[in-house]
Amino acid sequence: MNRRTLLLGASTLGLAAFAGGAYVLTQRRAAEAEAEAAAAATPTEDQALLVRDYSPSFGPADAPVTLVEFFDPSCEACRAYHPVVQEIRRQFPTQVRVVLRYTVFHEGSDEAVRILEAARMQDKFEPVL
Image 1 (spheres, rainbow, N blue to C red):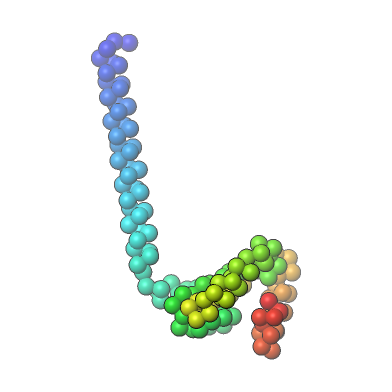
Image 2 (cartoon, rainbow, N blue to C red):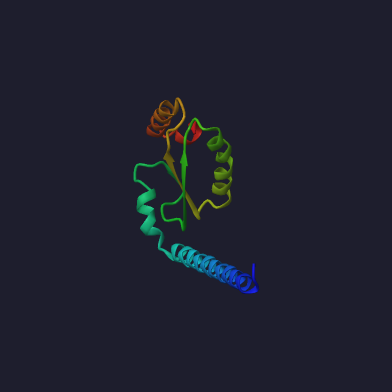
């Protein structure tokens, strides 16, 4: 391999590395800008998609923070997460509204949802939960 070929190959690799670095930097900046735009979006835009009138909720409706929890009553991970949500509710009783949304994935979950909804009609949702 002569010196000219070696120099041309090294230059090509250097240019490719520079172009790749520029591309990665551009993508990162675009992702950061998108994240900032999403953070600046008003909550009412997305809230209508997540919060349904018929969904069980705890806390004031006008709370500055709304936490939407998608849970499966038969899910072990959801059950493990429940004390965390309870602690958030205890620490911020007037600042956080928790809205529950059912996601029925496990066996027997549909029956558990029916039980929870029957308890909600009798104003016993939280103890049954």
